[in-house]
Image 1 (cartoon, rainbow, N blue to C red):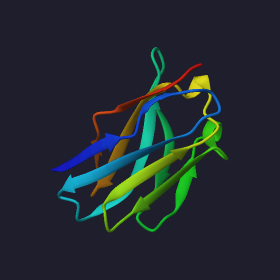
Image 2 (tube, one colour):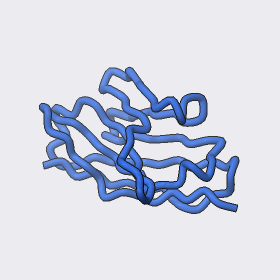
Image 3 (cartoon, rainbow, N blue to C red):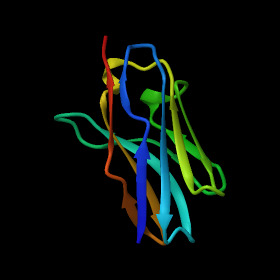
Image 4 (spheres, helix red, strand yellow):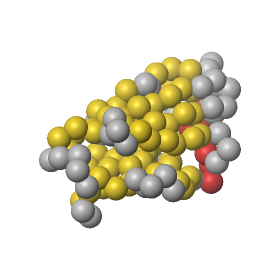
Length: 115
């Protein structure tokens, strides 16, 4: 099993920044892609960003140029730097990791963008 623990969510004003972290523990050997999805009330869960073990990234169009995903393989941790936040970024953000075709999920962290 892989356990994912997220941190860094909270309340921020529009235009502000937050940094989310997600640490993987347990059967970490073999983890390839790690990433973030989000789900706002009444909406489907959507991909925000993903990064492979080798560092290749992809982003949702809505966050390109504002969010940056990175990872520290030595610490088995993935980060999401979120800048220029907008009210529509408000959602529960979930970390995920895939290992040999199986996807593990974190418990989620709330991000609220409001004045």
